[in-house]
Image 1 (cartoon, rainbow, N blue to C red):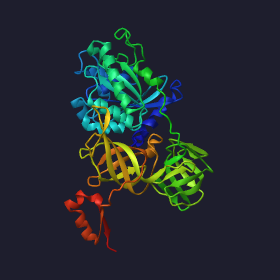
Image 2: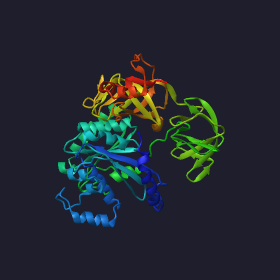
Image 3: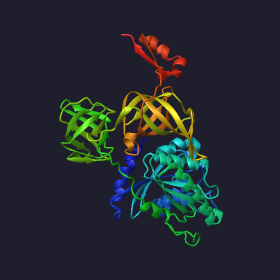
Image 4: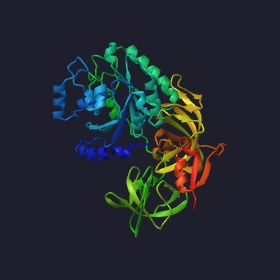
Length: 478
């Protein structure tokens, strides 16, 4: 569950922007998302952040000022228009899709994702969190923590984000009351403690007025002495890089001619050099890297995050979906794994259901056993036999053939997956591997039919068969 492909162009455009910056911390970028419940002011917050960091062009600023706003009575621009690009978003005043923007200060460069607050667009919020290093969780000071706020916090933690800025917005609308701020902060810290490790920085602010965004609001919020939002973002440490040795899922086998066979992908962890011996998982074949080809030509070494083509010392049976690994620490391999996931479609997940699992280029049949669901109101896990839409659950994955994963906490790219409905082809859940477990005793209920090809097409079109497609295997007669 990554969005790297979606923001490659942002990265390329951004290179030129930060090249001339005054040492933006050696070019270190911070990818963060802004999330929270609907109407808490996410788009306004990011718009104000762009406005106050002078990241809006002069003509765009002039147009926004000339247009005015019906959103406030302070003669301020509608900062949300800098983010809400869809017509439906502007008409409804909500965020539907994930909007990415990039900006920089003299200290750092940033890529920010504005994610939807509506419950029905939770899947888009989860997508925005999939590559973020930090989350800015917005809370309306008047409403406090809502169920969707808690859901977003749980998803943020599920996605491996351990840095959260709790932005308590609209503090001006409660008279800058310190007790209101402290009550919300205390409630969130109690909730966050139930999720696990999480570093929380709480900031009172007004996104519309620009108080504590870039400029400190010392007069209005004299009782607060902490950082502004931009100061907290500039000071945030980068996300922990995977400590695993070399990992690279194969995305494509390149054969431009008979004399060349290269294995292409993005290095998920570690580094690789010419002459290094690695292993192809799951086959276990050992090969030696004889050539590393990058966009800029051949290289002696390559590192995590780089897209490369590797050439081996001999031909080997490796294809898309296989994983190239360091021989000293291979990935987990087995028929059953424990996982945590969030459901993304109205159909939800059922105990014992069969699905397609897609991970790092692999497509595997899987059957699931649901153990628990996360109760947002009680901040605790409870036994469950089904997971409705937007539920967070703990499950067991059972595979027909041996599967390979890393724990998500060790490596995002090789520890994340999505579940696909065999009936609708919808992506119905996104999840993370937590560990390898013993396989259970699910009975094999799949039926295999050997039929002439024309009759097989008729059978597969029957509604009863379509409804249980994952349990029916058709083998054409030879």
